[in-house]
Amino acid sequence: MKSLKKILLFVVVLLGFSTVLAQKVTTQSIDKPSEGKSLVYILKTGAGLLINFRLYDEDLFLGSVPSGKYLVYECDPGKHLFWAGAENRDYVEANLEPNSVYVINAEGQMGAFVAGVNLKPMNPNEFKDKKLFYQVIKNDTKQIYAKSNDDKSENIAKAMEKYQELKTKNSNKIAVLNSEMKFQNADKPIK
Image (cartoon, rainbow, N blue to C red; front, side, top):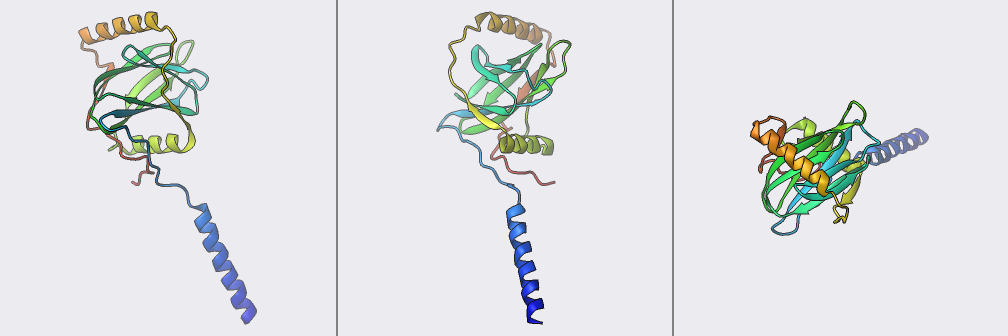
């Protein structure tokens, strides 16, 4: 009888330890901006794993983000025009508030010859957006924006010309990141 109690106790303790060790991370903090600044996370998901999308804040080259990484960019609050270049160009107009964190997904799309890119502002009130942000922060590597000396003036000029053309036509191809779309964390969302 004592042997049976010892075995039962051993099984209960073993199951308890395995439960504790098997628990997955469900809460993840994210970087916060410096006082008075805004912080933008730019994720890279979807097709085009071998393509590095070129990311910009209007006329500032933010860098190329390879697969398995995401970009963290601190900037002044206010109006911004984020855009990405691949086989195509895609745009997001943003109005950022100070001391706030925003997320944009640079989603790879199948292109004719090379992958295209679709920039999508992420909404912290949407389950699928929170889930994607959680997964990327959990599994990918952070890349912090660092100033580049690469001359991108020709690419920037062409992109701004295309943006003005889309604006003139009141195109719905320009996404909008509202100031209310602030992320507080990268916790695992619960339905």
